[in-house]
Image (cartoon, rainbow over all chains, first blue to last red; front, side):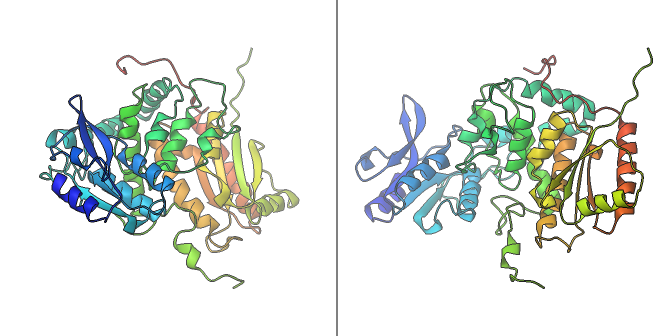
Length: 263
Length: 147
């Protein structure tokens, strides 16, 4: 990893590179530049996951003319593609190196593609086509499912962690903070909080699972969004991060090309 | 004391250009339909955010009806395509969250279809009456084994 990144940085292709640095035995996401280039380490697989796309997005917004490199997993590569589609990042200003997830992590995530297309490091782990957690929920009676979800939503402390960590939540105005739709003074928030967020994840969620990881109330958000992804695929034939076109739920997608005027 | 009969509360989002005019025609033509419906006029069925629908259920609506122009007739050209895509998906989400997707209904009602409007309201009210009151949508105490 250090050789490739070194070449990119020293060749002036990128101004900075987001990769990991071991601190107190744990890998931490770090922005490598020419200044700390000697701190680069050799690649090793790790189950640690970070909102590295969020860091890249923040950095790119601060320095719109700079080019950055980033070490991505399968989910993060999908996330990058979505950010390109929504024009949050410029494709020619981002260089990626891909790393495969370990088999253990792929199983834990029930990931359907635990490796990026641009694979530089590691061996691809087998993909999991089905999610056992979602299937278990689907097998329950509807009433039991409602109780199950409500008792989970009950613990929500409205910290907005799921939104803030989400790599594809880039809006500057959020309807979950709308004073009329989401009353501010009650806890737990309206149960529609998570369902509305789920709606917004439709056609966007790249299944990185950081929301569930970061949730202090341990709400099984990932099962909810996995189901959302499946619905979008079944109904609209769209796969976030894989399909080339924009999400069919984005306002006026292909319809924008319609000629204006009366007909 | 006699128990009060369940009267469904149905919220209807009607688009200004077709369905609201259809409801108007039903009224002008003196067609009878149940009074369980509360109408909100919107500019286009495509402006009805899933947020509004979920909020309605949150506020204990027993059913939500969204009605707009027929496909191809939208005043804003493609608004109702958006409604169609969105509602199909919200139905699936409601089902997964444990809510009966039959409580949400999408209909295309043109300005000339007063009879259809009255029929839809009658039918939908009967469906909801049959389903019974909507389950509460408030967070409930912990179930055993969820932590």
